[in-house]
Length: 217
Image (tube, rainbow, N blue to C red; front, side, top):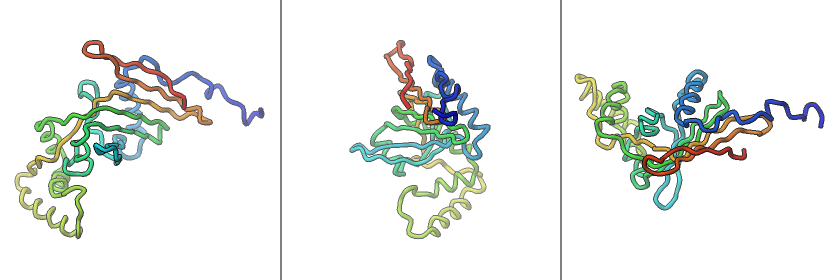
């Protein structure tokens, strides 16, 4: 094998994703690095849902809370949208974070629970006024005959609530938390000798805990 084809020590090194780690703490470490290096929206994640008969769909959303104390990974959406309807019909989902600057990704799978109305209110009203208006005026995912129809709604709603400085949260605008049962960390390595470790939630009651294993790349 020529020098240009030979494997170097870095490629042959042991896994750089520690066994026995707390996957929430490991997520925090990787997320912190992404916040330093990603040029836009390090909290962007692909959210995959499916209909009850198994038809999948995926789109990008923003992570708005995470951690063991949070109960998982939280995002907000219009429950009348396609994703909202799919979630309500099948309360399971998958998330994917891909941080190109770090050459890393994390896949997360598990059931969903809806946040409380108080939590939804608090987050909705933490957003800029213009974002509140844009969300409340939108029939998300529904057909729109003319963009001007939506802009007219925005203008009307803006004027109606401008004095109070906030828009009442529509009842269908809510949030969901994914409680992870599987979390897979992937790290790019040269020559496709990638590093993958899967953490799986096992047990019941007080005996619940994380096990982990390496996966072939």
